[in-house]
Structures are given as structure tokens and as C-alpha cells.
Length: 205
Image (cartoon, rainbow, N blue to C red; front, top):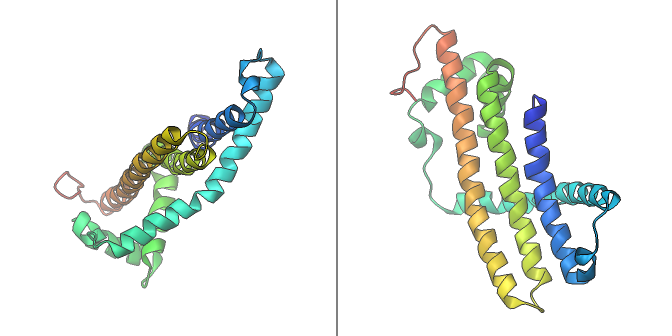
């Protein structure tokens, strides 16, 4: 992540908001009277710190969501990269010429991401924003599932709403993850075409 704006966006969306959501719900469930007390500056600072820590914990736990997405993707017959991106075979040739042959799919993505981060700052800012929103959606899936479990006995309506929200944000996470990958590959292809002295028009990408 480059630039204070992008770092701040990541901190707020990926960590503070999902963590704060869990913190407020937990306080409401365990000690609701705390939410009715006068809020001091110290309580705000403590709440932000706790939200930030909880957000990081959610990020680690939400790796399960990433694994679930990959499992669904493997079982579901989806389109390949070659089918999604008409330019992909040409991009692979550029990657092989630059980084060697026998690159795995994961390595192709990582090399493209590194290339865009170092050589295309404008595109990298877009990818940073996508990443922050992707992580926000992924962490919020876990937060909403936790909320459903937290209220499963006392308020089943809240549990159902939370589970529905988790499914909505899971789909949002999938869509944002695809958009991030698309931006990475398209930006890398544009860079290679420009370096080769060619044109990267809309028909190519």
C-alpha cells in the first residue's frame, strides 16, 4: 500500500469498521448499559483501539471465507482466465519473456501485481481501493456470522438478518475480488503493450 490516503482507507474499512461493529454488538449483548453512559474521550480512544485489534483478528479468521470462495470456485464450473480476458494468452507470453517459463497461476497474478505496484501508480491506487473494500466485505462476513451466533438465542430475528447480510457481503466480496484481479491483469497488459511499442485499445482489453 502506497500513500497515506490508501493506508487510511484500509485501516478504516478493513479493520475499524468491522471491528467496531463486533465491539458495539458485543457490548449491547453483554452489557447494554455501557452504551447508555456518557462517552468520554478515553472511552472513544479505547473503543477505537479495541475495534482496530478486533479488526485484525477478523482478518485472520476471514481466511476461512477466502478458502470457502476458492472451494466454491473449484466445484463450480466457471470461466477460465483465457475466456474472461481475450488478451490473457498475450499477457502470458509477456510474463514468460520477463520472468521465465512454467509460472503458476498464482505466480502470474503476483508478478502482475508487483509490476503494477512499481510501474503504474495510478492503477495501483485503484487496486488499493479495491483491496480495502474487498477486505472490508470479507471481514464483515465473519462479523455478521458472529453477530448471528451472538443473538441466536436471545433474538432470532437479528440472527436471520445477520446471516442474510453475511450472504450479501460474501457475494460482494466475490465481485470485488474479481474486479481487483481484472484490474491487475488489464493494467499489467497495458504496461507490457506500451513497453513493446504497441497500442492497448479497448478492443484488446
